[in-house]
Length: 386
Image (tube, rainbow, N blue to C red; front, side, top):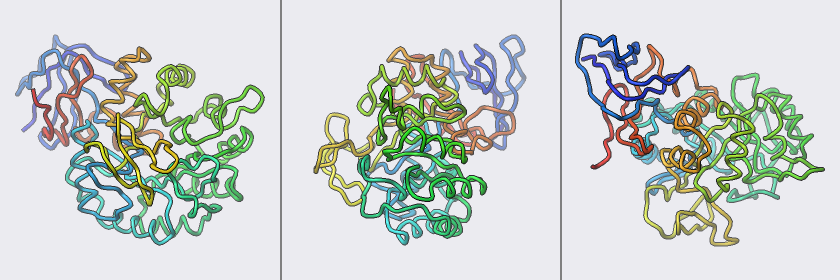
């Protein structure tokens, strides 16, 4: 049965409307928005002083609830998809770590064969974080799998994924990176740049070849120096590229995150979690890929070397954080975790915006930016406890 949401604020694609009514059709899609003085006839679902926003899109997430994409277990991936609804996420890209060709191929087959059957947040593609990286900024990626990019390997993975390999991150200084980028982006898959010690010029060459995203900006990349701008300088300076950003307060200081957002504008910042299997789990010992990790004080760190190993961030907390840091408006925070995130991965035609005819995947926010409810196809799937 169709209904109309009445709320204090609606974050629509082109603008934010105060008060009014948003139609949800009986087949679970968005209809039209009506202003306050044009109350439609039909069932009204009252949300009072709450805000309606598009469902969030987590485009870089490795694990959740004790599971990891690299476990290659469809049931576990589905558990993750259900859990993401508690973070306001209605679409996501299961994200791999570096691994052997066969490991990654097996993950592609599992997701390719089953995507569309998930019962929670919708899988909009697969994100390969690696294996074409370099060692200087390896982070929690295993360097024994690092190598030069191969378009032949990519094609085999894509075939196994049934076309769902939506994004792949590479280090632009690897041999053949520019040629690989040209070929891959011409197939419609997004190329990102990360875990790299590249110079500004090397990053720029990859961008001009078609790369369009920087992976978790500032983390795992050559820094900004006034004579050697590096990867960070490229991420800040180059036009029409999107920058992933982890806003947990640990990976990037709030002041630095605010500086990047100011420079690039929210339409080019994709908030991500980079969450690993300890997300929504208690502190303790975990594994990321083949590395032991410990979780304490809101951070996941490698036991050997103590560097950050992904995060335990929830995307709804990321949007709350950037507002509380006085960096952005609520509208822009939502934009960076929905439309911009979807755009950065080439899936904005499927998710990330409230538009007539789109699946009614939306969240209800309280005025303090806390998550109240998550809806999938117009049906409530999560409600925060009072």
